[in-house]
Image (tube, rainbow, N blue to C red; front, top):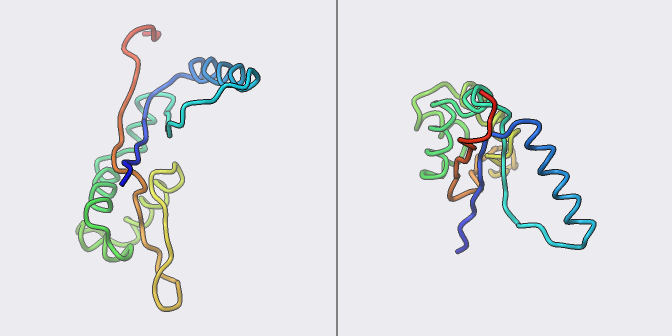
Length: 129
């Protein structure tokens, strides 16, 4: 089985623009781009707002225990289903969680983490203080 990975990083708007220009330059020359899934945040504060300790626990437990529903995940976490649902919807919005439907009438939303590994990456040099 192939390991699915995502690289999570922190990049300024200027860095993102530079990288986007490079992507367009490579595409116009007919070159292929590396098939790397990424999620970048503009700063550490935004990163921390997205990946709170509770949301990281949601990711870990979902990936490890494969709950059959949001309610089952909430029970595993010892949290209220509505709070877990909010975290899952946020994580789905940034692409770290997906939902599949299941159950007799296909009404059960089953959370799935589509990655086996997540890597954090950020620049230590060349950033404005």
